[in-house]
Length: 622
Image 1 (cartoon, one colour):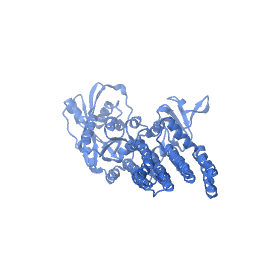
Image 2 (cartoon, one colour; image 1 turned 180 degrees about the vertical axis):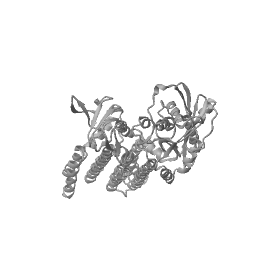
Image 3 (cartoon, rainbow, N blue to C red; image 1 turned 180 degrees about the horizontal axis):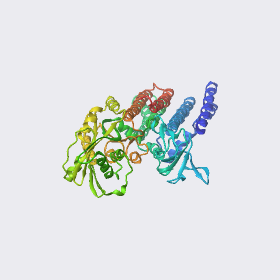
Image 4 (cartoon, helix red, strand yellow; image 1 turned 90 degrees about the vertical axis):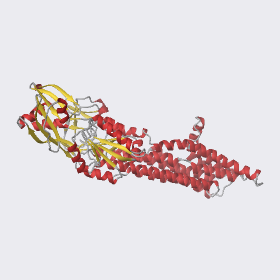
């Protein structure tokens, strides 16, 4: 508990003790009133103060106003015990709610305890701890075992195991050695590392993630917006309803029935009506459910940018995948070299040099298969043709390397390769020189991930890829994906997603899952964009609505299950709170429910709803 909560607890204890003692004393009249005012003001002075400020600021109708009117009214009717008890139990409920919210915030901050406090920098031969914000790009920092890596960078010296669980939710450590890129937020477990920073602290992964989690509460779901609007209309309505309940029945009794007005009874019922009608359970528990859901997801390495995206994710029925890096590892290896007119070594050399300026995984695999240092001075006039390949002059000879579309585009006749894999056709000086086949490995859990999505109620799984039809069909068949579109350019993927969006109903939502590389247009076009393996990828964190911090496709189904649990809890709270309040309001209006029932309808329902909301934090076993 914080200091403020402890003060409220002390006030609750003092008021409760005084209330019990005064209830037993045989005192009447003004003395009874004066003595009961002591516990009432101890427990309720801040509520009365807030209600007064609300009236002064012309923001009259809130729960403070309802409580102030109900309790002051009860005291004026001589029900000192009930008036004080209502205020006491209301404050108990508020304390519980404040503690629950604080606890869920602490849970999240512990789970996301990745903000580094300092960075070790060597100055004049001494190790100095400085604020990470002060470290410039290119500075060499030292990270000792047990310390957090404060800023993204490249290891220049040392090797170690890194604990990434705070970022990914996975306990398996990752190994890092000289030359490896490392990201902030990981904990160095074994060896001393020297890291050359590649970003400023504000642009590092840890800052991006913390900013994302902190800003998630500003993006409201439809349920939250509904509750906010509902409370704005509902609270004034019940106040006017209470006035009508206090005034109209006595008038009807006097004017039309010839009975005594019995004004005290009807005012008491109106005050009971006010206490019951307080919308705390809804106003507090709905945002808390989303807050806990987003926190629980972040603990599992699933970062959701707002409760609106959590709500959309729960309605997902179509899941569209990019192939490379999402369902496959994106680790391409040359699996076959088929030359025509050249030796295998000459063919792989020509392709590796032509692709040497590209950072695409296929280009890297060609360079890896070549296995020697590339002298880029031998290469000139490099032209990249989107979705087809590259042309370049290597030692003065024009080399073309790419898919079949490239050779057709250049008007070069070629022999089609029938091997399964990504085919790179090579031509030298306008003559077909052979084919290199590159295979991409499936991710270990890719097949399980598709099965898990179908089990979670996803009706259609679709794969989009720029790869050949043969490769795409082979991958889709192995994974059990229901629909596949191959040989697509980046712009074609957006068109395909738009076609799928047009096919589905309004209630069904479409999620696109990509690895964040070249996927930004499709991620933003889908109902919800999910970026996978976003550790260290700024583009993915910026473009997507949901960010999966590691490469495991099983997390997609888990993210959907988390969102559905959260939304289920939200609706449980809405239906439960409204149902109990309607029943108790009716009982209060007809005189069956007294102030004690009203206290349950307000404080009891709020406590139950808050406890239910906190369940959204626990998603480990989903």
